[in-house]
Image 1 (cartoon, rainbow, N blue to C red):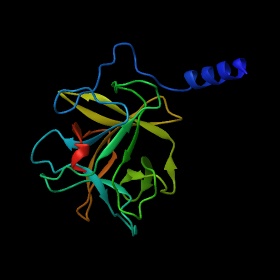
Image 2: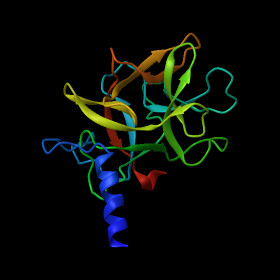
Image 3: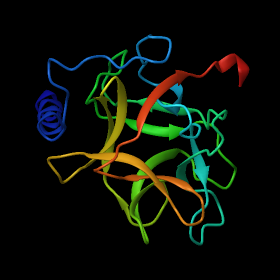
Image 4: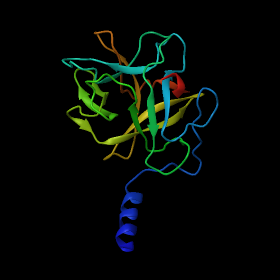
Length: 195
């Protein structure tokens, strides 16, 4: 039994990406360390660039399955649980993460984990789990100038891709794989007593 557990540990360790020893902790808007499994609003770092991240409908969706930026600058968007499968207290840059909304419309599948799926005409968009054609992988947070950026790391690729905003003809500000222009973000701790 011990041999089986050790073998599974080795397989997991050799097939996952962990941050380097120089990775720094990620902090929120109050300069506190992000808590593994904590709930935060993901907001743009620059004013005048819209509000926080939430859900919208695109294409033929009858339920909001697409992660998008609220056009209202005063909106915090929806609360996002930021969690790593590693048994650690705080979030580091480059750490493997699951992102999921904690408050969603009843039509959204549970859990509402984020994923990447092909969406025409733009390409790869961030969707909630349950969307057909989803790509396997995980999310991560990296330093970007004086702030942070979100990235998606496909399971079968050695590199990760930036996430940025794409303004569609429908007016939706979708979160998409966008190498050239990542969205600079910050994390505001959700006051759970207010929910």
